[in-house]
Length: 429
Image (cartoon, rainbow, N blue to C red; front, top):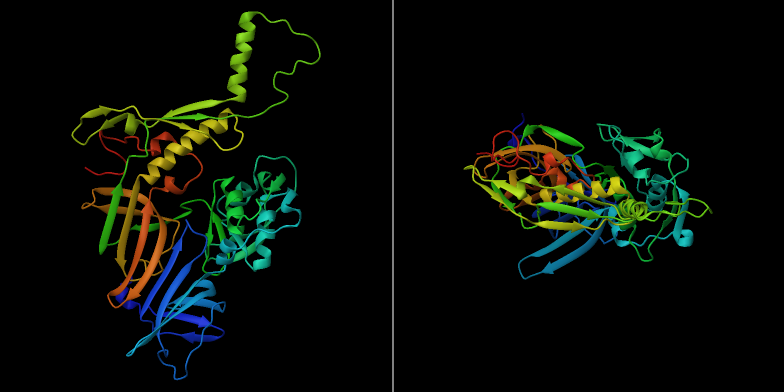
């Protein structure tokens, strides 16, 4: 594998056809938790290698490169100038095109979409901004985005992302991807990115910015590195169980005007029949489901000592839910709480991964570190490339995949012991 010293870590800003280098400091951040890629650059009054005075104004189109690789396409947001007796410095900050979606309100004729599939709604929202939508061809992202549990037909035109990162037009082939949403209301004043997130959450998908300025829709951990995390310069890990519970009780509700409809004929019930009907009605109209987290209910320490704890949590699903969805919601909450109980921040040398590519978000990587007593595959949630007088590093935030997976996973992935007694999937002995 290529050594970090083989890369110049050259950061280049392209504005209005002109390129600029020679930064005092650089910070470029991408995260699956935020819609836009952000950058901040500190410069002196004149650029390295250029004799003419520079002028960059907020609103200018910009592209940022690291060693010739595109990392951000968007606009300059702000210009901050500091003047002193001995120096004149300027800070330039900007974001990818998705920054406009984060700042701007969703504006559509009539304030709603009727009879449209989710991909068509998203495409209509981003079209005025000149932003494209990409999905992973190896997942069912187009179908999942469009599947909002409504009936109807209609195909969505989407871009499927190849391994090389380029997109091509395609048509959602699965029946789920042809479903239309009966009536999708826009909340007045709602930001465009929030609207898109609402649609993606219906199908348990993430939406975040790409280096080319478009949006990527994908499941969490849609790809993984073939190597383990290399030696780290610094690491900070937090393991917090205060928001994990031994028992998750989901209580849903739904309306069904046809439930129990026996026509116009009168029905005479015995007390037992009436009690059975009431029980059936409660299970159907107010479904409940319970799942247990064995790692909390019966914690086993590395020494083999078992501690029983009672920590119940009542979960109220958003919107109507049938019994199956109610169970899924309880499982998802347990998985999410487990994922959020672990947070790892690491700093590695340079901008490049061992395979020569720039570090990327939404990838799984094996983390093995005896100092942290940690041996687990974690998801890279954010990447921050940073360069200043102290050196060139990449800081990454990692967590279990469940922290960013809206869809439920099996209980075994939520802290259940595997193999030896007292061994959590997150900890080595």
